[in-house]
Image (cartoon, rainbow, N blue to C red; front, side, top):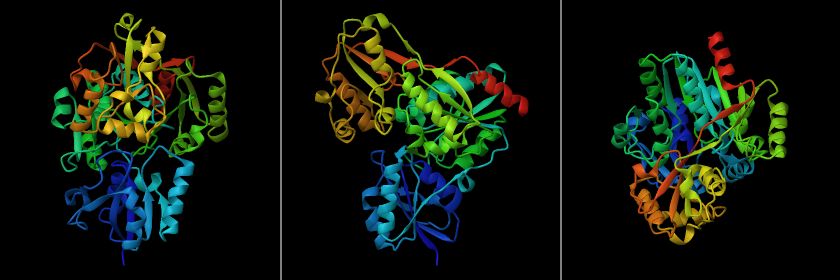
Length: 440
């Protein structure tokens, strides 16, 4: 008798855990995936082409709200939680729901889910969404390339379209983004690499992705993490970013604390805008839980195009979607720029919201003066565009990692704001990389 399993996910870690441990494993039958966090991913099927010989009809992807019903109807033995950025309280609430329905509740760790590469792997992860791992990844990429090394980056998955077509995705040009019908969230992560004439992979099957990346014979593979998940590949150097704007989250969110405990290097980011109290809480938690980690102090100053036009304007601020939603931040780079450069008013976007943007505000009710750049599909991108264009703002401040003007037509002037990482003092990331390269 095969053990019956449900994998709870959000179209990322769940698929990876299945591919690395359950696919072709005759001891288990995965009866369903459940989906949450990301809109419109339930109701699909994890296709047979990816699921393997044991699943000729694929595996259904059900809404997480049906979890108890599925456990009981299929007499499920085990439920695997496989998504990220979750308060520890939330994780144990899910454990209680699962065990009260009769099944075992499990979390899977690195031993059964990390893949070993034939190339050196540097991984960049975080303890929460929105800590600044993207700019940290860019900083590490720049350091490695300045040393003449060939680097291939691989991004944590965001497969919200045709899963078979997205098995292995390679991005080297803007045309590749169009070819793969990338969402705003995907473009935010891939475009900075393309801007640097650097290749980045993503997709669904991370063993196949790794083989493709290794075939390009890089000197280093750079893992660009998602949310606060731990790496899919076994890292030779793990750099973890923490956020003193959310002190204590480094020890109270899953699986971010796992990253903190495993880290070789911890980057305390955003120190230029955080309180000393917040920085010290984070520093003490690092000392308590991972005293052997190298600590790098850093800031993420903003860079604004044509900043003078902000002064005196009534502005609409658009920020990175995931950072504001399940990352729970109330503001980002755009808000900071509006305040710093003298906007007369930051307007409330909610009266102008349409469609799924209205639902986003209902679900994430900590948001008020910021518009999250939700864009998980063409329809949602159009709704975001309509929300922006129907507002009464004089100027749009784009605080997203990509320029939204590339994917939508705005009927009002806009300026773009971006972050870059800057280390404070020593050791810095170049010291860390030099030491790593000497050892390798």
